[in-house]
Image (cartoon, rainbow, N blue to C red; front, side, top):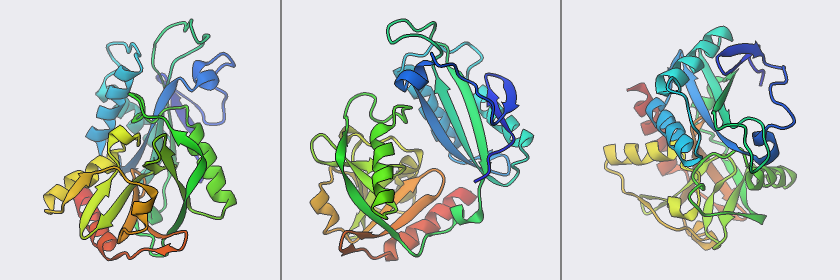
Length: 283
């Protein structure tokens, strides 16, 4: 996917291939920061309020000290200005990375939230259900910590990164990540939902998944259409008795899982729910 010609960094447009951090940057050294991935369409941020609320919550949890102008309107307008600069007028993927500056682990120079924004065009495939289905597995070599920072999309992304490498080597489309108690947390770039007897089930935030904005939207949509949805701890064995499985994130919305090992899943409910998601974004 071709990136736009420019990126945004702290109020300035720079060439997208320009080096913008120093070797002493704390995000580079320690993963000190977080990111948000946002889908945009014709100058509109999908799930805007959910994204901006999560960014605000993450700033607070990671004890950044934003200046007075660093509010939701500033972030929104910065995103839109980059989309215009890159002429990404249709569907686009935006990544906002927020990070502390230089310093050692005990001596950050300050707690200013540097904001870097990048954008890429998206094809129409991001708005279609994958009828071929995903083939996924469970990553065996790392677990997700469960703590007050579990729900943040942290720049320290190592378990997910290695899970994605493992999935690719195993010719899988994605990998599920376990927490330290052996429960499913989420997938490398998505939240997990099971369908059982017409009910939606997803791991609770107390089991360590990222607090995905599309995860939050699924609960909103389910409530609107009278569909039962709940948070419940999921063991790997629960996946073997589920009727259907799908993954969600802000870019593709929903993707149907066809296979986990030798377990085949249906897609009747998933197809129907995907149509409800499309209606939700047309509102």
